[in-house]
Image (tube, rainbow, N blue to C red; front, side, top):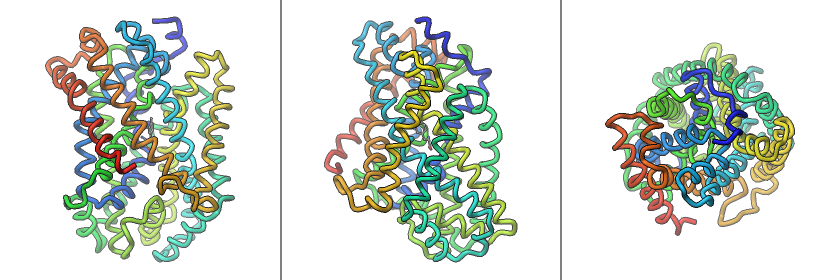
Length: 450
Ligand code: PFF
């Protein structure tokens, strides 16, 4: 391609790609968002639709997006431009890259606020304050945070500064190292919480809530939310995985690495759900309580465990690390574009995108308190940004990626990149027929929801 290829350094190995891609996929989406969305949308039926979306739509698009990234080897905007040129297609395809840059930026603005909550909880847990805490006190502590713009402002600022500092140091160093111990750590902590849940009296109720589908709870909106969550959780449709693919060495199998990452991501979300709902039912809490769900339930569980303050602090530390590795992926497309196309030093690109993102994050901070009554289409600022990005922009980005990979890119090229043998035909069928039409159908059927 162009000489911009040389600006990109490549991942040291397949493992490094898997770590980085799971770092991007596994984050607040799995631990914070999946459980509360499942709680709000009726449990089992939502989980089932979510799993279907991951398998039938998410994985083929994830393979497609990684492949486009590796073939283009630049930031998403330039990648789409040069692949469109290669396929003799309309250069307007590069707007797909733009859509991704903007979605990543908007998601990070609120992601940082919630990650800030997790950072604060590291200290709250460690202080011993949550020892044998009652459900009422756990709710009160969370509400104090929610209604305080000052505290959220401080932690949002710290999180954003930490993210931009890491991003300014370049792609492989800190990121690879952090992900290497975060992932197994998170896994162990979730298993520990699941063990606790197993012994709690709400276990069977929690499990049947999560896994026994009540199909009467499925409607246009819950399907839209489940599909949006599949895109959000896998980190699809916005160029993040495209940019990670662009660092992937040529010989590595995209499909195997991708399926591994998608499975790990799904497992973490399910483990989080299994940990949380038994606590909800054992303590007579509401599964529909929304974004505060993990902050009002997990402290109760940790509070009852021996050594719970330390484990709780460690858990929120791991959530913070999981959030920061996703945050890096969210802003990388914007930073790569500014530094590669605008010839801006990486540090300056980080500074500008970080400041802009931090500013729009303030809208989310205020949406939980002083602006909670300011709504558009019945949604406050946070809910609106979340809805637009996860449920509209990422799926639209996904359709475009699938359509490009399946219909525009030449068959020889995708076949050569993917080296999937006989499985190639299935993938091609999925990206040509299943994914774009399924996503478009869900989006169209949800128009009345908006
Ligand atoms: N997948 C991340 C999570 O589940 O928290 C969020 C995310 C990261 C979304 C990267 C999109 C993305 F490109």
